[in-house]
Amino acid sequence: MSVQLPLLPIISIDFGETRNLDISKRPVIYIDPQKARDLDRDLALQKLYYRPEGYYRTAEKMQMVCKKARYRFSLTEIKNWLNKQALHQIHKPRPKFIQYASFNNIQFLNEVHQSDTTPMPHDKVSNQIYKYRGVIKDVATRYRCSFALTDKTATQMARAIQKIYDDPNNPLSYSNTFIVDRGTEYMGECRDLLLSYGVRIQYANSKHDAEDFHLPLTDRSRAWVRGLRINDDIYNNTSTRLIDMSPNEAVKKALKGKKIIARHSVKHRRPVGYNEPLLPSYTEVWHLLEPGELEGGRRRATDCNWSSEVFTIDSYLIKENQPILYKLYKGPRRSFVREELQIVLPDTVLPPKYILKN
Image (cartoon, rainbow, N blue to C red; front, side):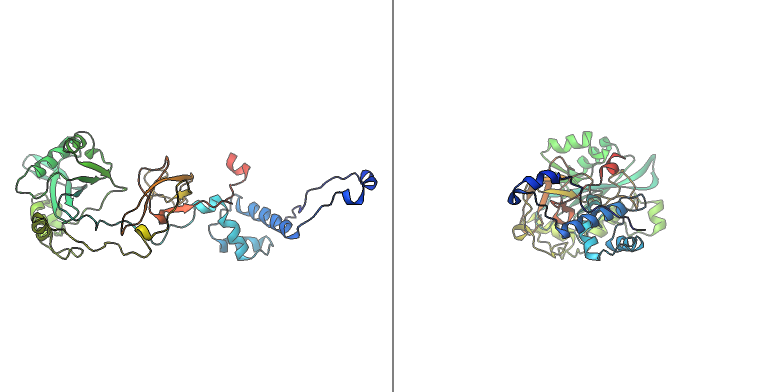
């Protein structure tokens, strides 16, 4: 059943006084029929959208509800109204494509290293029970070195890293930049060790996926520790697609002072770098959330995809052949590319007061 909403406010006029006024000075009320219809439509859509069974994510679903309520709003009208609602904006779908930055501009050995740990089946060797596999990987050459850990303490991680970097037979040494996640194993003594050698620690957005061992499941589950070096040798002698050579060949080339030129790991589907349109500072945006970021851990179907808080762009970094990276004022520590930011429209409408109070 449709609800009849008032189109215009009631204005009381003393007609006794208006008769005594000059005709040219009498008050004239101009009524814009289109604005009256727009107001009527907006109020009707608001009542349908912000009810408990509302919050429709698509204009098509909203149109079906309007038809049941005997409203004949067009799909275009409903889309335009939804796009102005802040609640609808933060529930918009995630982008189908995101132009991430690539590492092809890193061209020298020991310029940038990545490290990560992966939980593994418990493997007892002598009197030690190893539970985790650690990896250090050189970004330019793709050279990899793995090690086993009995726990994820920063002390044991620092010892493992120091042992690898102090080994004269290992091409890896203290790098300029060390990329890790925010795990506790990279804090404390591990962080102090890297900083003492002038290494800049860069924290990644999320944990990197460690490479598979390429071992049969039975061997991997029973005795993976003894296979670490064998597996690394297989990996380091296998040609890598992006650099068209094996990591060992790349290391030999890098030791001669030559650059390691890699192809882009991500194809550019839009202009990047200095050709990319720039979002100016102080632009108000919602940022794309990582899965489970709101509640910390698990993502639910009802979670929004964009931040519920509005942020402003604080700074940006432009590099040749790389997408522009944006930092948000008082926002997350990570940087964002253009697809991960949604500009807040100037005519964005907040939910009604009775919704915000509840």
